[in-house]
Image 1 (cartoon, rainbow, N blue to C red):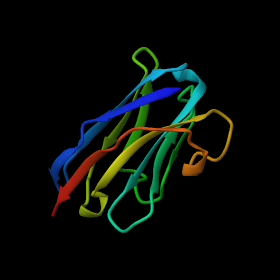
Image 2: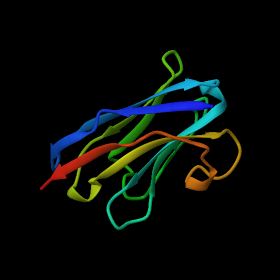
Image 3: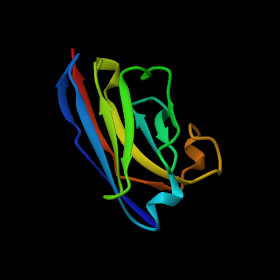
Image 4: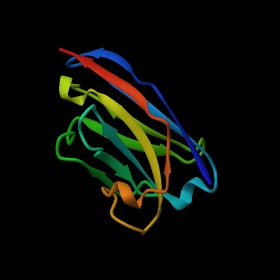
Amino acid sequence: QVQLVESGGGLVQAGGSLRLSCAASGRAFSDYTMGWFRQSPGKEREFVTAITRSGYRTYYGDVVKGRFTISRDAATDTVFLQMNSLRSEDTAVYFCAAKPFGLGAASDSSAYDYWGQGTQVTVSS
């Protein structure tokens, strides 16, 4: 079992920045690829970004490339999502998720076994 707790969401103006955190506990953090997904009302859950267990490889959804950065800290079992140049269309609930390394595509939400409760990000225009 892996428990994930997100934090850092809130209200920000368009063009601003936010940094989300996801604290993991339970099984070895290093066994998992970590991902961020988001979902807004009436829309399907959308892949945002993912990072492999070593942090060597990262993946980004097209709509966030160049604006968002994912990172992880093995010392604190935490993954971060730095979001810059935020837009109103980035408004959503952001979820942290964990999947066993090497199983399934990083962008495939069904490959992830563990999910956090989500944190709301609202970008005002």
